[in-house]
Length: 115
Image (cartoon, rainbow, N blue to C red):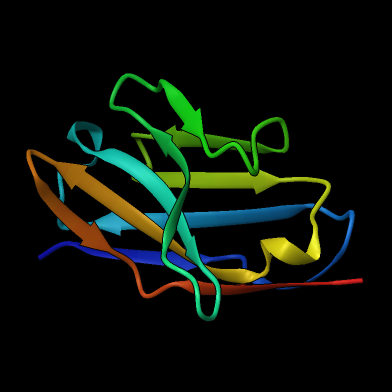
């Protein structure tokens, strides 16, 4: 059974840096596209960053230039780093794994950016 566990959320100052990590188990990690999504109250869940099985990354326009997604297939982990944080980055951040139309999600980690 797939399990994704996020860590690294919390309270961050505006302008600061965020580092989120997700550890996966129960999946063949290297064969999954890994992504970070986020959801703010009253808004739809949106993709923040995604990294393919061959480590090609893509980013939402709202974080492009501020975010870096990376994966470590040996450790079954995917990491998201964001700098120059803004209050509008406040959200619950979710890790996701996708392979052949099947997806798995973590429980999410709250990130709150304060001015």
